[in-house]
Length: 512
Image 1 (cartoon, rainbow, N blue to C red):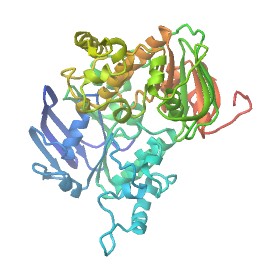
Image 2: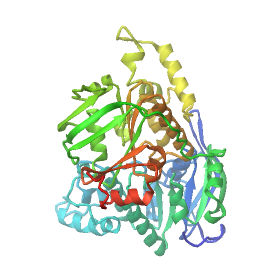
Image 3: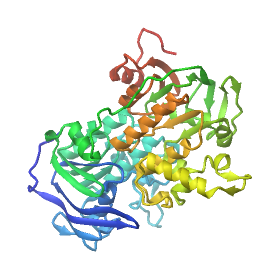
Image 4: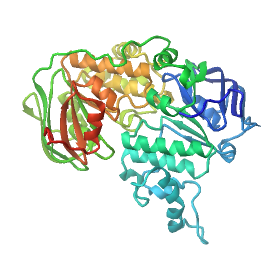
């Protein structure tokens, strides 16, 4: 954490009485926000609090409906993205916004590609230009690789490298570690430390409070589109900060309860997905929450997608309740009672151009909401969705709101709500709390605990070791495509788990 600055010292970003309205929603209500030169300023709040909307206004993706904005002393009214970029402002979105079929080098230099005398992209110079920016954040990514060949975590690092090409003086990061494992997160923090040494001003949005306290100088809290406070980091405890964010006190961050663990409900043997993972074998019991952890490229998501039939597998067997399953695709998995909340909600879990209602009932449409396999029982569908919205505290003006207009965290709740309506027996959650605020995380944890208590088997994949240790009963560790360790969570520390995640071995061989 750096030196605390006075609020009136060297103000370089000054937003005054900013308001922004969308149909049926007040996204921002008379918000004041000031950032000082060279500081790392945290912007926090629940999903739907207005954080991303405020950042898009700073970056001029949106224009404010009321209020004023000054960047480095210049009135931003009438400016567009090119103008604020010329002032040195770069925004790293939650959404990756990469071109999958292009190379890493091309994505890093997107829009600023060097060309030869004939006007074609100079591939050699493109690599030379991209190399130093990528090296700033990672030395493990091949410039010639296509982005679609990279892991989600590696793609996130590419977006950071791309932001550096414009030589930013002001850097906005919106949930930058949501897709990163421990090693990549540390690399990002080292990079941000170097940015601070160079005098770069940073606005940092994150739901991971330990990160806020590690790297930020001051905090601004938004709630329901309004500013609650701005304060130096050391003047707020985490408990106080959470209370300001959610408007209530959360006595227990992870509401874990003991549940009765029963018979094996899912048995995976020698599973070999097409990519990365190898010879995966494990059992899942009813009432159990089974964690799976590992570094970038360990193969966690590949295992989940192979079980669900979203990706092909080369070999291996899956049994449910002692019966062999033939899963050729997601429909077979859904019919068998297996649900998957995927890692990439907007691309894999939602039809973003459709309404909340249509997304939520999609997985259970034929089973619960169709008469004669054709006519939709609209009243029953509406009642079920409205109950889910209320139970899950979804921030939306209507069930007919398009999913693309929701905040990232609210989109995730819609994906999870969809699978809850499916009444499945096995639930696989792949990074379900990525980009979710502390109050939303609490709601998701409670829902997962309730599923287990009611007899479902739950697989919980996450890069956040603290939540895995607190929520799960048992954890499998993957390294380089293989299951290398199984631990009982009770009595296991985060340092021990991290040791195995990073490939460490000891003599007490539960290692596989």
